[in-house]
Length: 106
Image 1: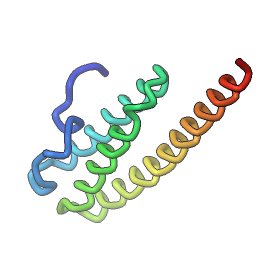
Image 2: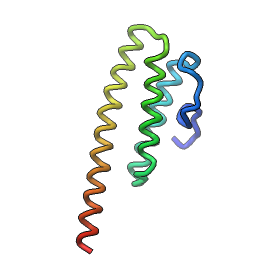
Image 3: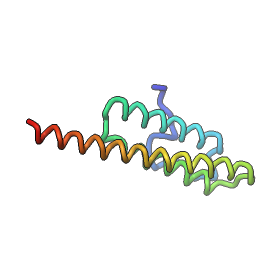
């Protein structure tokens, strides 16, 4: 998805109460797609900002008023994001390790 998305741009976004939960979820998904694109393109430097954007959006979801069912859904999404973050961090560490090995070989 290459179209710009207002929620995944910066931290100067409206307060959580003004964002619809659906918009927040779409922002999390859009930012996740950007993360995947960055990893596949080896654009490691953009990962911290994208991870922060995604976490910010989840914080908005938890700050918003929502039903128990919606909260359960966001808790599940938050768990999936935490697992994704851990996998991305491991990938970056492995990339750095491989680069270090390649530098020693030369």
